[in-house]
Image (cartoon, rainbow, N blue to C red; front, side, top):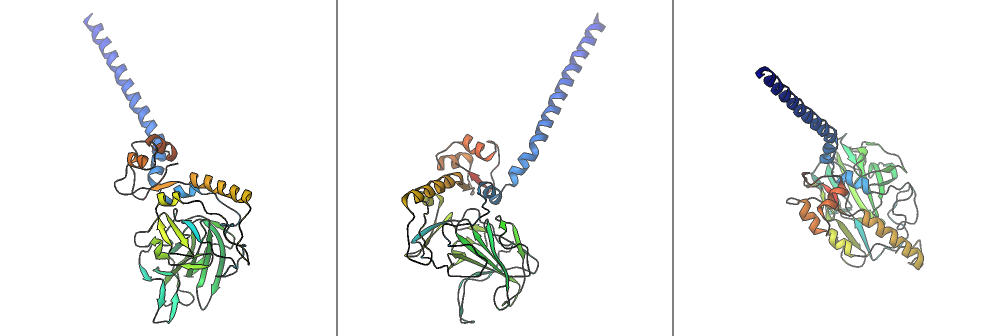
Length: 325
């Protein structure tokens, strides 16, 4: 009888042990299946989030602003400048890894001429990347100027120029995404040393890149840049930018400014409003948590988690971009 009881106890013990092992194995399998997703979530940065939000266009980026699409170098588009235009800076990617600015925008007394961009120190062969998503308008060579250079027109209305490269990696009319390689650093054209000449323009008008971007921090200075042709342009936070009305067609081709008819303007406004709603994002800053971000934008933690495919236990990283609507 004692032997039977001992055997029964052993059987119960072994059954319990095997069940525990099975539970642990099952849990490990579940964790293994989740791990790749969690790993991907941890490495998601502002660029990958913005890529998901962008509406890729195979046509002409910022077509409502520019009169046409061509592959010719120009700084004049024959259009009247809008009084104000809200340029979305979210989704910016540094054009190179270097943080060293060697020459800023402005008048160069030694050369007795203006310098219309920012020079960033790079070495021959360093990867040069598109600052925003858009479409390559020009791939060319200018012996007495930019050397081998690329011009990209972006969805936010800006055009960026990348000069003095040793090699161009894209073709004209090619659609590119923010952070995508477009060339290699070099010392071609009118250059006294290997560097990247980086320009930003709006409808052909030069804008000092350092008024929008912090090259040392690899970041933007604001969520929006409100370009003004009648007053002082300024940076805006996401909250300030959202309070302003969406951009509408304000430029005309080769003649006086005209406004689109009310029906077309209303249609475009609604499209832009829907797009704006789809692309509301927040860049995580030091001290941010899901609860503080949720309170800031009047949403819930569960909503944030659902929009970004994360959990309440996900560790936020400084610089990470989260959708909040």
